[in-house]
Length: 64
Image 1 (cartoon, rainbow, N blue to C red):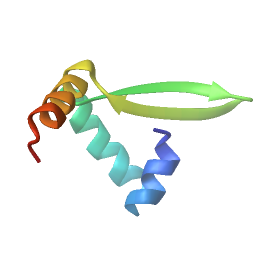
Image 2 (cartoon, rainbow, N blue to C red):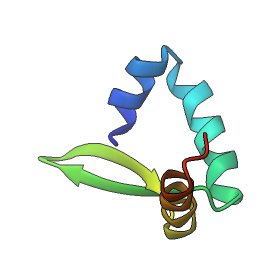
Image 3 (tube, rainbow, N blue to C red):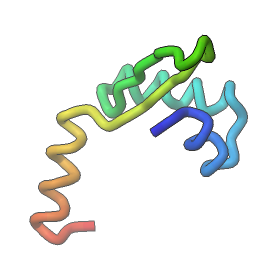
Image 4 (cartoon, rainbow, N blue to C red):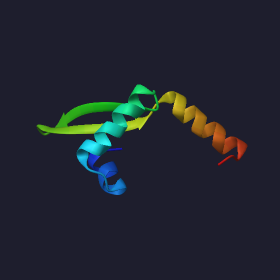
């Protein structure tokens, strides 16, 4: 998910969301990728493989 979309959806400031994402990345819950599109910086975040597997297991076992 794009940083700005997540920021707007959660109603957080850039700095606040950035700090949270850093902590989540350190814990291996998300992977942050920084690129540029038409010379504009773009930050993307997504679940790590471990988190995807855990989410699938939750769905398969019907847990919430």
